[in-house]
Image 1 (cartoon, rainbow, N blue to C red):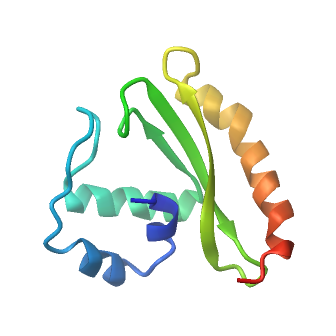
Image 2 (image 1 turned 120 degrees about the vertical axis):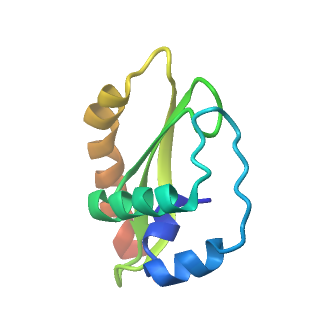
Length: 113
């Protein structure tokens, strides 16, 4: 599940895709409840980034931002990962979010898909 790409879709489409889907927990932190996941996607949509703290793998934090083409459509995501024991969520946001946003903004004009 790529949160940035799901967050870019209308909520009704996401709900339809998730309906009847059994989400599997990969760690104790993985969100598997669809209503809670829909709330997370709303936050990702509003914030234009996603911070995943040990939901995919214990000890792994990941920060991602949507990659938009020249028309503003989300076509991918760009992310960085860090070891949870070495980099706090706050540091990841403070240090890497601006870098990711600048990189995706610079990339957008070259994307025509």
